[in-house]
Length: 83
Image (tube, rainbow, N blue to C red):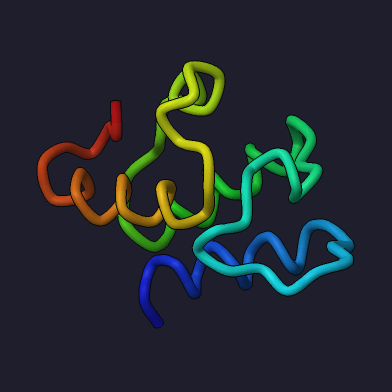
């Protein structure tokens, strides 16, 4: 399972989304709440041994699931703390 598939599966377990999730689905469209972000952090920690800084969502650096997956793939081997 690649990173995007892992994120999609995780989000689908957390929230009831009316549309199919894909790389272009925006973070806003998913309707995540703070507890959902914590659960995603737990999955990332278990899978990759890393966590992601929540400020990346607030800053707009990560806007879509594709952005999120790409960021994880780019940074997961560089540091245990995905800053």
